[in-house]
Amino acid sequence: MTAAARLRITLHHLDPAPWREIEVPLSMTFKGLHDSIQAAFQWFDQHLWEFDVAGRRYGLPFDDGFGGERVYKADIARLTKLRDAGIEEFLYTYDMGDDWEHLIEVLDVFTADTGTRLPRFLRGKWRTPPEDVGGPPGFEVFLDALADPKHPEHADLLDWHDGPFDPEDIDEQIVKIQMGRLAKARIRRK
Image (cartoon, rainbow, N blue to C red; front, top):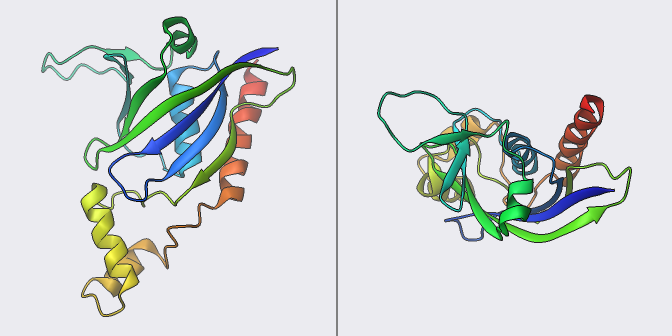
């Protein structure tokens, strides 16, 4: 039996807001959760990121010489902290330039059957914005331009994205494959 959590992850500041529901083992680190979110949202892990859990930051600590808030090592801290502290929601920010802020809600903490492959994707809606699109304002321009062939940036953004963009198609099969790879890698590490 494995202690696990069902999470709903919603990308803020977009309407409609892309969201995903996933299940993860509580033995997973915050780095593992980051990897799971990257897979679920089809991000490419090209930018800085961090979690804010009840005012405590988890990410990849580095000494920037500016004396900012402490960032705890995400590859050491485990998700059991959520259960132990009764945390029901927290934040994940990806790409500090585009500032993609995600609300993570703990929907359930449960015991998964032995042999359950975690992490796993359950469901979701709305496609994630492409990397480096310029945050929520840039994504709005991107969608407007792609929807209007007469828009002055239509051809350039279509070329930049390497084809059409369907905001409703989340490529569920690709997400399931990526999450399956993460689950398989966890099994090999045990």
